[in-house]
Image (cartoon, rainbow, N blue to C red):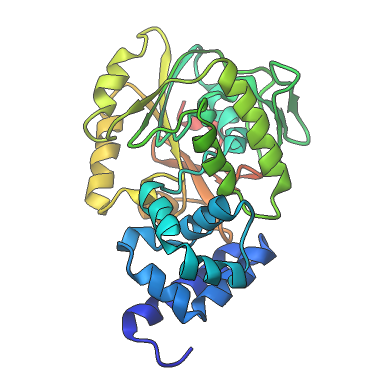
Length: 333
């Protein structure tokens, strides 16, 4: 679209990149909508008035979905900006993209089950804490299966390639806690509606799994502490029972911790402790770890690493686990 000033043009390009890099092949609805937003002066002008961290596509799309009760198209989004801008702005300022994807446990569980048992888990950026319950869900890795602990718990399907250490039994978790700047409450219908609004339109299985995981969590809610990962992680680690293997893990979180020097302070804190550190982030979050991977990054994959050593490429929603050649589990543990 011609005639945009430079800030609007940069914002339009951000939405075009989102359409091409993230939504393409995953959500035709959001791919088309992001392209339409990039061409809409009205929507771009609404966005540019928000603080820069609040202009991100997933936040806008989730907030509009929450308000409308369904994913918008460009016509309904333009009307919302014209007639309900205050409501849309309020949600985008109050909420963050705290997508709590429990299916990511499918790529974490093989690592957790291979550690000395029992375990004490701390998740950084835990949101509602659904990933703190990996031992309660079921798993289907194709060549291996684990049943859930209750009939209504979800069973996560994950395609596996390479010599991943697929477990034959659930890990034994004796203590668990999450840390988040703004924890979501599994007992709050409003908070859970926000989590569901963040799921993209075509992802019906993710939506069903989220609802099933919420049912599990509501019976015995995980503890999620409000706090900062730099100031409050060490006191939380100190609470973990000494007889358990302490694991600090995170997935799709550290990209929001900037600048990189702050990220490194977090890493230094974990590495100086007794904890095993499991990270599952995009390659650009820890480029020095990604540089040691034995295969280049496939398109739009996370890098799963243990104590800074790359182990596998993973689907961002836990849908795939691509174990790296030559990366046996026992080389580090």
